[in-house]
Image: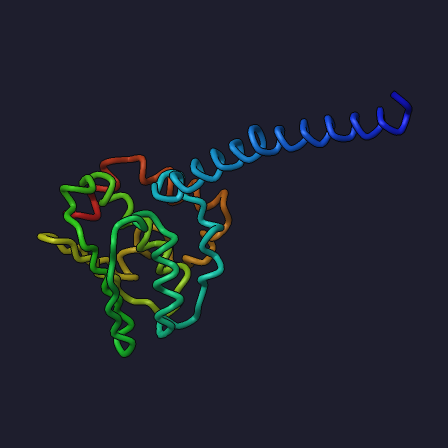
Length: 180
């Protein structure tokens, strides 16, 4: 074989090895990381708050914005419908499932988390009502501020959010206090 043919064969082998590496190592690794991230996004204890910062708004009147916000918060896998009262600044999220089917502890943690996120990101939102088949939960801005501080926007950095929201949601007594 002459040098030209050796170079062509070497390039073909290199191309084949590069293709196999991408197809069988890099892509599966990236897919696994994405699946783990998606799984983390559906749990209030591991959710990345920075993933929803794009939905910050001064007013709740933008239905696309608050819908997208809730589609990126825990419980996003549960089918939901929205009803807004822009005059009173109230939002109702109707989940088309039961608390029992999802898991009571998960629902309780995730609703607190979602309420804090909604109040932090939608400046004039005063109340969020969550409706499930057989159960309704209501969270007000005052209740959220009493538990997490008057200046909710100060919670928006990842470190502060983890410390003041996610770590507190690990305490079952703290979570149960919202439902008494």
